[in-house]
Length: 371
Image (cartoon, rainbow, N blue to C red; front, top):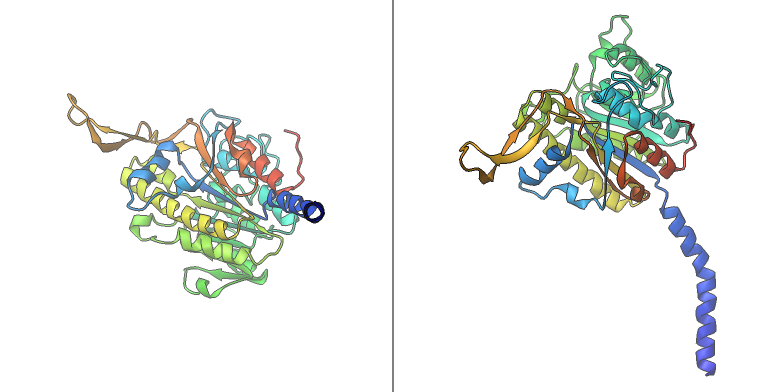
C-alpha cells in the first residue's frame, strides 16, 4: 500500500506541475504564426475537380481536413468580379465590382496585409498576373477602379510589403507621369528584378520581381514553373521575420482559361496551382504554426466536367468532355479549403467577407468589427 501511495503522490504531483504547461502549449497552438492565403482566380468546384482527373500525381486537395463554401456576390452585382471578390477577402466588406481596397462608398479601408504590417509581420504577394491586377492589388492598394494600374503601382510605395512577384513592369517603369518606380523601390531598400536571374541568390530583405511587361504568359506558353518557385522564395524570405508573415498567392490564369472557354488552358493552370499548393502544404507540415487557406474569388466559365455525349443515343461514362456555359463569371458558390491552427473555423457556408474575419481572428489582430 505504501508503494502504491508513493506512486500516486508522484503521479499527481507530476500532473499538477505539467498540466498548466500542456494547456498553455495547446492554447498557443490554436493561434497561427503565419497565414498563407491561396486564391485560384475563377476556380469553382469543377475546376478543382479537374485536378483529380487530369494529372498523373494525386491532387493536393486530398490533404485538406477542413472544407467550406463561400458566396461570392458583390455589393453591386449578384455576380462579382475579381476586384470586389478579392477586396471582400482583404477588407472584410462587400464592395462594388471594380473596387480596389475601398468600400461601397469608395472609402479606403485597411487591408489584412496592412493590419499584418502594423503587427510587425512580414507580408508578400505572388501572382501569375500583373502584380497590379485586380486580385493582388486589392490587398495593397486603395483605388476606385481596377483599371488604374499606374495608381495601384504607386500604392506599393506607401506600404512596407516585403516581397512581391508577378508581372506588371510597365506600370512601374513606363508610366505616363514619367516616374520610374523601380528606382523608388531601390531607394526604399528593395532588390528589384525584371527576370528570375539572381532571385535564387536572395534569402532575406525586400524583393520586388516584375517578371513581364504586363501579364505573365500562360503556363503552357512560356511561363512554365514560375508560380511554385516564386511562392517558395517568398516564403523563404518572409519566414525570416520572427513575428510571422501573411502571404497571398494567386493562380491568376485559371480565370483566363475560363473566359476564353479553353479547357486545356484552364486545366494546365489548375494543375500548376495544385503543384504550388503541394509545396506550400509541405512547408506547413514542417512549420505547423502556419494556417493555409485555399479558395477562389468566384467561378469563371460555368465550367463542367460531364460525360462525353458525342453519341446522343448513348453517353460515354468513361470519357470526360469539359464544357462551358458562359465566357463570363458565374454566381456559383466556391470551395474553401483550410489546414493548420484556426482552420476549423473555415468549415460551413458563409459570405466571402467572412474569410477576412476568420483570418484576422485566427491571428488575434484587432480591427473595426462594424460591418
